[in-house]
Length: 327
Image (cartoon, rainbow, N blue to C red):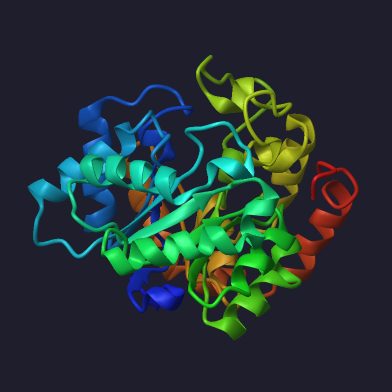
């Protein structure tokens, strides 16, 4: 699989990584053995980047990855975790003292002395411009408990604020065929600054898998059921912030663009991979088959050729005017 340098980490990562939110919680139940099977299948398919967070299953996702890496000590996998969502979301909680506590917990879960990459997990907007926050992160790098730090963002202005900081290694942002705004400023700015871009929610919560219909039922503990209106966390994390029916119509139109020989999901991932400045894309997978299929999208880059205008037209019809006001 193609490897790209993840920004200022200087470390190569597979252009298709693995998002592991679903291995912890909020996407329906996943058995421990099935979670390990997903990790194993992803690695066999060439994946070298795992993305997790300390709140995914209250540490379950981190612990699963930690156990997997202990059982496979020869693997060269870069793990990016996230911190900050374990407390009330006020800027005052983003302190060096709290960072140390959160990082120590993640180090224990992952079974490592130093974390490869720690990302602030969509904190309040003011945090991205706080000198004290970046000073604290620099201190943790100097102490050797983390090697690199980045941010996960909801908004483009948050991304740009973080990119302007000299030691920000990476920015994680929602980017898919239904969320095009990052292409305007964020990816060009990141490329110019040498900051990595991690594209999350690449399949728009599964809409771009091409498998959902109006009859699709989601489990009670699946965020695609309980967070459609942003009741639990940011609504942009679920179906790109639009109502389900609108998303389904857009997904049908996207599917019409997909040539024979690839799935709709692979075409959606290939479109992201083709964007200039993209480091890695992190689709989730609940089965080994999904992990393998996602990884195979890395070999389908040519599928994206000629799709730009049609994707933009779908976005204009269904998303530009209706996307949640936060964006």
